[in-house]
Length: 157
Length: 385
Image (cartoon, rainbow over all chains, first blue to last red):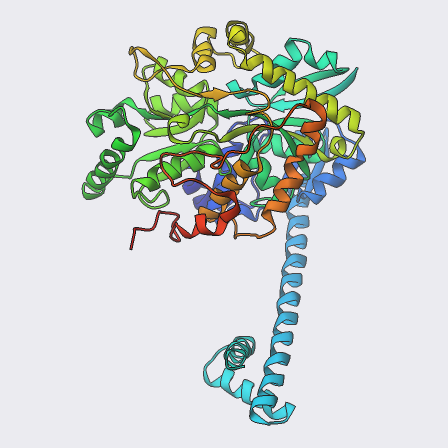
């Protein structure tokens, strides 16, 4: 039980199928916390259900929810579907995260430009050029330079 | 009769729910408690989340983490009545006790021995000691960590912490897979009776008042009619008050020992209810003050200060970042208005230090920031400057 983590790393599984009646589920919960294996699809097989339950399961991050479905010949196709859906979801999540951070970066660059215009008496284009040149020279992201400018100039008042 | 499906894990602190069912307190309130034994806390959480369970016996820190969306998606639930305070112990394997050269009566005096054993193993190129708790969000994890940290032992570096379900603890100790564990009753006593372990400290010797398990109610019922909610809390409170009466201990022990509940010998369960623990295999029993508390309202009414301490542990050990909104979220989770409406009577006096620990200075729930500032990034107490 204690070398489960090592085994999970060694096999690097596509999907982890956990029997709900196996007490080792809590062992896996801890492993998911300490390692990055947490991003794995979850399939749930149950023997009874209603619509509310399925909706809740999906909200809870379950990729496949199968009612009365634990038949040998169906398991592989269900797991394939589960992984495909999980990856599609993970991609969307990733795109959303990227879009959010791009938006954040744009906001901070705008603020840095405004501060530079006020403190150095330059135009908006010149302020942007200053930021970009510094970012290129220091091989840093534009957002990081803008953040440093904002922090520094705001401290100066 | 309204049927309420309630999940539980086989532990002495599920007693208020079991007594409410067996002694007819649920029926008095117009309810039928359908008690379902589960094998893992993750199952309890997920089955509650998707509505397979209406309510459940749950680790208080797990209820807190689930309601706040820490470590997992947010699970809408409320925790309107605490099932027990304390009831845990830290147990070491017989082999590890030999490695330490015996166990002192004072658990704090054992810390330098454990630290020395860690150093010996390190210089011999051996693996560090392995200690088990029951879940990442559990009092057992936090008690074990706070204890080790008080001795300057980094729980994330100097030892290996693993999770093992309570009924498998004694067996894992016996097989030498782990060197020690922190778990609830009756599983420490099971390890002692099997000759596999020595109790190092009952948790009540380290912390006086930690909320151990809570009844949690899922969102469907919580948003439903107030009468059903009142009835569930009232029936559970009656069960808890019955369990707290020492005159019922014998009957309670027999009840809990049944195969569909704990499936553990009644005589052993009785010791954990009465707080008469045998610390070493074949040794005498010793009375432990407040080993497990079911009293109403003192133990049963959820206490925001005790929850604040649990929240501080979640932050201390890096499971989440501090959220200034946490106290408001705790109030929404514990809903003391529901307890007061269902149980009535005067609320218990508010204690200056809700936790009471020999390992830490008094805990002030209003100064969470100051409490957390006492620990470094690893969660270890900062050395005085």
